[in-house]
Each structure stands twice: as structure tokens, then as C-alpha cells.
Length: 324
Length: 310
Image 1: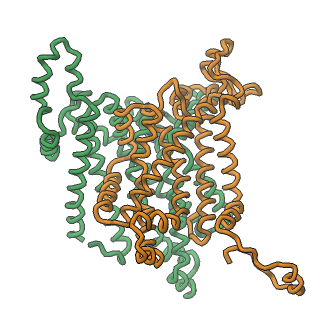
Image 2 (image 1 turned 90 degrees about the horizontal axis):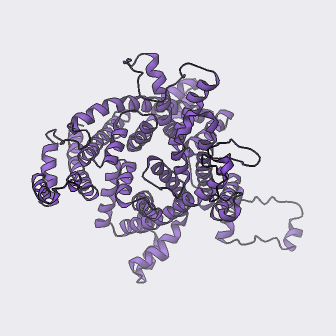
Image 3 (image 1 turned 90 degrees about the vertical axis):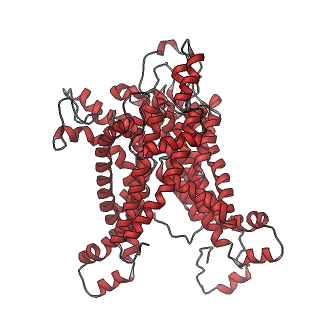
């Protein structure tokens, strides 16, 4: 197990190097680091000086190597937009995003497992058909449109038609001003809609997947054996089938984390939540290359870790799988 | 068996035989058509998509109002749906139904073009990787690994910011990033098909690699390719609208369903303008839903034995 983890971590290093180099190169092509000096009246004399100071006269791989050696020591440079250290900015925004990621994943997983198991156990029942229909809708629903409609119907509509002084759910930020902490109603009222926006799509896809996995397991020989022994149906479903039907879902969830981070960009934009996704958009609109580089690096590390954890978890859940 | 008909023995079997009731040989295409038309949702979806595409691409004739002409009496007056304006009017005093049809042109065009381009690219890369292995295979898996650790939406946004926002650029950028999935599918299929006897026979009679791929392997996997082509239309349309909504896609004066949503984002604070958000999104939902049903129908029709999760 330990050698496996060590090997996976070693393997992710070249991936990170390649990804960071391609990003570095692409961003250097896309954004001109000297942009802010170009319009100045003495640009002719300033440009060569700045070009040399920023190391832009060196080949691209030398520039990248300089950035990378600093980056692995935790120095991601200074943001052009905020003039803060990129690392500090990123950690700050990650702290906000964590709320969405944790609740989004947790709630999606719980609902998806519940719906999937129910649909499989009661295959072709009215409930199963209802959930199937809903999941088709959920998969086809553009997430940003869901977010917008949720704001109109659940925030604006109750406020204007029932003359409430404040809405039932909020559509901006994580807390009202002066509020903090996560175990209060204010937090729930802020988080409900953005989390729902994140949840809709993953639940639709994951519950279909969990249903298929559960049906697979219910048809397996050991389930028939358990039934033949005369065990109660409930016990067979939850003790024998359910646990094994969870295993494949773990992989799908891990593969979807990249999509989740993409989804955060939209969700945080709609609900004005100052997290990683919004940081990315603001940096991109400002042409802030150091911030974007840091963002890609941190996201890549998070996603690699998520995939690694999923594989380890996979091995723990299913002893038949030998990692190595 | 594949015809799916049960011939029940009756007493007057001989009479029927005399009447010429031998099994009518059916071509692959006829079998495919029969299976497809049995999938009712897929047929309905196909009809909806065809009608919708027709209405959008001939919007100049179909649309009830000319969107280039301004009705000054409606300017600034946002009206909800009515008999005269099925989907209401927008802030510029235009009939929203007409605008939606014109916007659909771009959304659908991008969806179809991206699906076609990325499928062609993906099939080429995937079959090369599966058949020849080695170098191309490594590149393919490296790119796939890369997308596992960087959100695609982020890459697309950066690329569009750099290359510009015209529809041609959007089509090529989306296709350039969208081909990996179909490439992986193709690779897997080619890997298993190339071990089959008919490929060996072709090779033994001296057929070249490209010829074997194009003439012998690809025709055997037309099903998965067509299904993926269909489904990727939905993916491309949603991705385009998402990017446009974030401000990286289509720019005015052109318009797409995504841009209509982003233009009217302010309507979230005013329920009387809700229709400005409802209908463009509804169009996206309907198109994606229909495309997905169509894909399901095609999958069943191409491969009736296949086990699937739905």
C-alpha cells in the first residue's frame, strides 16, 4: 500500500511539471506581461529594462524553471491585479470554496446513493420511473440556468409577492454582514441555492450510476446465495448488496471532481461567492498571469490528491483489488 | 432472432407457406430502422430537433416579427407572454420568440459543427492510437491525464480569451478540446476489433494499415461513433452557452441562447421579466433532452444486445 501511494505521488510529479509548463507557455502567449508599461510615455526606454528585470529575454523554459523552483517553495509570485502574494490569495479563496465543495459532494453523494438504491430495489416502480425522468431533466439542465431560475423563483418571487422584508434564501455570498460560523440559519440560507446548483447535475448522473451498480450486485451469485440461506430481504440488500454497490461510485465521483471545479466557476459567479472559481474569472478578465498559473497549479494538486484518495479508498472498500 | 418476431405455429401453416410467407431477408439498414422507430421518445425527439433546426435556420422567414425592426411603442416595456408575443418581448422591444429563433441558429450551428469536427478528430486519433499503439497512444493518454487535473472549462475560457470570440474560433477551440472522449472510445473498440479474424484476413491479403482501419474496422463501429456524435451535440451547445454566459463566447451583435441569458441576468431581481430567462434556458433544456433521447434510441437501434444503465 505505502509503495503504491509513493509510486502514485512520484508519477504525479511529471504530470504536474508538464501541466504547469504548458500552462506557463500558453499564458505567456496569451497575456503580455509588459502590457502595463506599453502605454507609458517613456515606454521606449522602460520596456527593455522591465523585460530584463522580469527575465522575459530568456528562453521560455528558463523562465518556467525559475517560476517552478520558486513555486515549489511556496512562492507563486505577486498578483498583477491585487498586488498580494498569489499563494495567500489562493488559500484565502480556497477557504471559501471548501464550503461549497464539501456540502456539494456530501449532499450529492447521499441523495444519489439513496435514489440509486431505491430505484434498483424497486426497479420499474412508479418511483423508479419518476427518478429516471428527473435524472434525464437534471442531466439536460444547464447548471447556470438552474441557478438563475432558482434565484428568480426562490429568492425574488417570495420577496416581491409575499412582501417579505428579507428573502427566504439569499443569492449573494456566504454570510450576511456581521455573521460568521457554519452552524447557524444564516449560513444555511446563503448556501442552499449555490449548493443545490452544484448538486443537481452530479446527483442526476451519479444516481443513474448507482442504480446500475446496485442492479448489477443484486443479480450477483452471492446475493442469490444469501437469499437462498433464508436471510431477510432487508438484510440482504443492506448487508450484502449495498456495500458492494458503493465501490464503483467512488471512482466516478473522483473522476467528476474536475467537472466540479469547472462547475464552481459558474456557481460562484452567479451567487457572488468569493471562492476559487470567482478568483479564476477575475484573474482571467484582468489578464493576471501569475494568479492564473497559481490557480492551475493548486487545482491540479487538489485534483491529483482527490484521484489518489479515491484509488486508496477503492482498495480499502474492495479487498479483491490489489493496489500495486 | 434479430427480427424480433415470434412466428407462432398455427394449424394452417402449410397454407401460409404456399402463400409465400418465407422469411423476408432484411438489410442491416431496414433492421436498424425498425428498431429505431420502436423507440418512441427517440422518434419524437428527432422530429422536434428537425423542426426546431428548420425554424432556426430559416428564422428570417419563419419568425413572426422582424428582429431588425424596432417597434418604438414596445421599447423599454418588457411584456410577458401574450397571444401576439408568445414568449413576451425584451427590453429592446423585440419579440422574444423571433429573437430565440435567430439565436438558435448560432447555438445549433456551433453544436452541430463542434460535434462533427471533434468526432472526426477523435476517431482519427483514437483509431491511430488503437491500431498503431506506441507513440500516438502515449500522446493520447498524456492528454487525457492532463484533462483529469485541469478543469476543461478553465482551459476553454483562457483559449477563447486569447483567440477571440467569433463563432468559427469557438467551433475550432471547442472541437480541439472535445475530441478526447470519443478518441478513447474509438481506441478501445479498435483494440478489440483488430484482433478479429476478418482483420487478419485483410492483412494477410496485403491490405495497408489505413485501408484496414477505414474499410474493415471503422464500418464495424459505426454505432458507437454515431451515438457519440449525437450526444456531443448536446455537450457542445451547453459548453458554448456556459462560456458565452461567462462572457468568453459569442459577442453582440450576434446572439445565442447563452448570450440571451447573460444579457438578461438582471431579470433575476424582477419576476415580471422572468420570461426573459425562462425561454432561452428552456430551449437549451429541450435541445439537450431531445439529443440525449435520440442518442439512446440510436444506441438501442445499433446494438440491441448492449446492456445499458437506463
